[in-house]
Amino acid sequence: MLASPPTPTQLLMAWQRGETSAMERLLPLVEGELRRLARRYMAGERRGHTLQPTALVNEAYLRLIEIKHVRWQNRAHFVAMAARTMRRILVDYARAHDNRKRGGGAQKVTLTDAAIGSSRLDGDLVALDEALRKLALEHGRKAQVVELKFFGGLDLDETAEALHVSRDTVKRDWRFAKAWLRRALSEGNDL
Image (cartoon, rainbow, N blue to C red):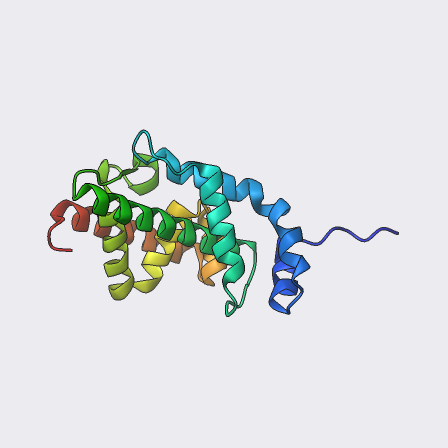
């Protein structure tokens, strides 16, 4: 009888135990999801952005395999870390780009109606990152919900599983975080 192929969670656990080949076997299983995340991120970037989705996936993967002290829980946890890593890469890229242009070209990201709520919310990626950092300081789990749902593309159930809370808690946190971010980004200068 043939053994079933390992799941992403099993490969993450093997990698955590020191099996270096596990990460190589993991990439083909999660590459499609990482590309979807990258396309989602890049859709909100300015036209002519020089960083391509494939390069974003590759850079995120390289950074993820360098992380040694993470206790991987499951696929949702890995996707959340990948989303966070991609956001960090794009924020670093935006800051470097802004430094070169001296304030003339902050990258725009749009939090769409479907993702963030009923009113449209536009802001640059650096401002969004700063708002998320402030939200994390005041309401850590609510910031994690934003990272998992908006940036990671996880649904309510996957987010609840990753955070070890109920689906209703995720729904409440998501509503609160959307309102909090909407207010923080509209005030802008108080970040």
